[in-house]
Image 1 (cartoon, rainbow, N blue to C red):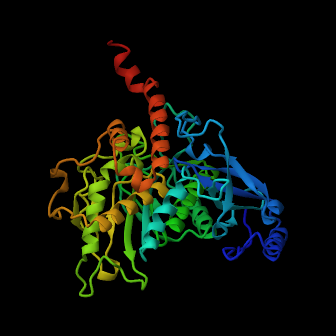
Image 2: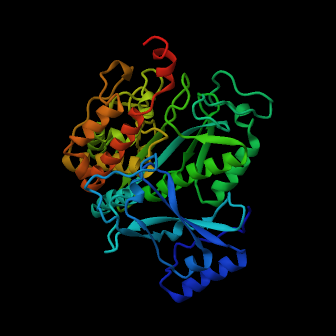
Image 3: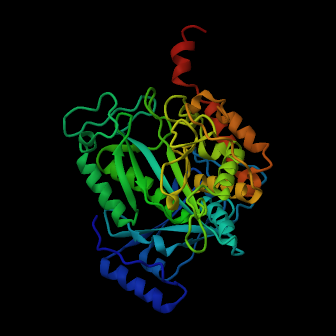
Length: 461
């Protein structure tokens, strides 16, 4: 469905009659029927309600149960005491900067990303967008502004009808699926041109600022790099990109897959996070006046090294996530750092002083973008505040160093559960709720009999 170009609505205040009338008039002229009122749950999955456009423009109130942001991947909820027995409401409040036409809708429709507020007006601590906003506020209180840019990898596969079967590769214009590995292939990038044309149009309409696209190492694996910017706005774009990719793929008989390791023997999918910090004058605090690395830069690295292991469950949120951490695959296995070194978990790309930054390579494509960005920014700021020293940079193969990260979901869960740092970095109530949800998911996983068990144990046990 193609809608007229939408102006920016970030200046509107829906408590003002004139602003409500302006938005209502636009909706009426464009024939907009309703608005998708979205937010990301703890997994990064879109939740929300559909609201009539007239009610949205009138500033109508939306509420949901407080537990919804902490919904398990199976659709269930934890009964941990951190969640009130009464299951109270929270209010959904739109960020009008995100109000855009919905590109995949069959009828005129808009969407907007929402914040979750408690009824007393405070941010809901269980909502991932709230967690990131609170971390960014710590920077603002120090006169600093974090800047971030994600690289998001994903697979395109044929439509999946049976989850018990391996994923199949799509057939493009050449009449056959891809074979072998062909990183940066332009021909293969063009094989699914109708899908890419539609996705380009969708993200342009949503205001998602793409830098580059490319074909990655895996068969039918791709990557989009988003332009750097404000962490909350960029996280919104990452959230909406994943949503758009899934929706547009379905319209073309495909699946867009953001699992960390969806296909055995193929490369995992990551979400690398490039990050820097600027002061009130817009200067990159990672560089000194003479162009050399600053103490703040080194302390930021020190914070990432000190606290990332405790936050690994955010970067790798499921049992599947840990299949991606394989030595020799350009996936990290530790928190070592190096200059332009892709064998380390923390890479410092070659760049001019004004663009000095850290690339955190830990997060998988399955990580919630709000939470992954909150985790890396919180750890880095703690390093600056506490003046934590980093290790020496790795000159050679970082895979030769000891693993500094949990190797399994269980060890990552235990490390966060026993951490004194995770609660102060991401919020005590959030961390406790997150651990409860992840424990519930893991229980479901352990109760599932796998194909591997049936294949090898059934005939021999």
